[in-house]
Image (cartoon, rainbow, N blue to C red):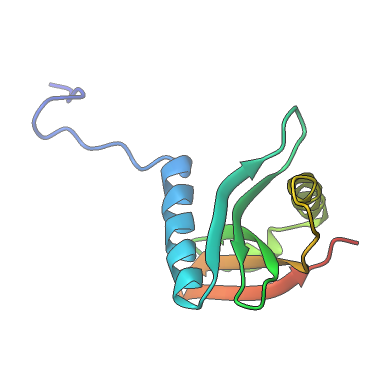
Amino acid sequence: MQSRKGFLGAQAAPPSSKKIGDAAEDEALQYLQDRGLRLLTRNYRTPGRGGGEIDLVMRATDGTLVFVEVRKRLSTRHGGAAASVGWVKQKRIVRAAQHYLLGLRRLPPCRFDVVEIDAEGIHWLPGAFDAA
């Protein structure tokens, strides 16, 4: 007899990529908070199609506004998590950051960080790319 959802012995579905991503963001957030950064907002999205998203917007102890991209990879076979933040993704993050900055009275110093989570642990790459 085939097992169906809800029956005893049925296997649970593997976690969705959304759940995996949310768990990675939770882990990265805790890691950065443990190092003195303060969360301002999470999953900041620009309106409209083709907009960007910033996983974590944080403030460093020196006042720098930090836009964080979180990447989780099971292996480093294809260059790891940081290598997956290519030019197009960077441009979307920068566009979202520009949109975020429109809501501020004063422009603070800013940087773009990547936190990669892989089988070896967490790797924080401050200033991983520039807005230019």
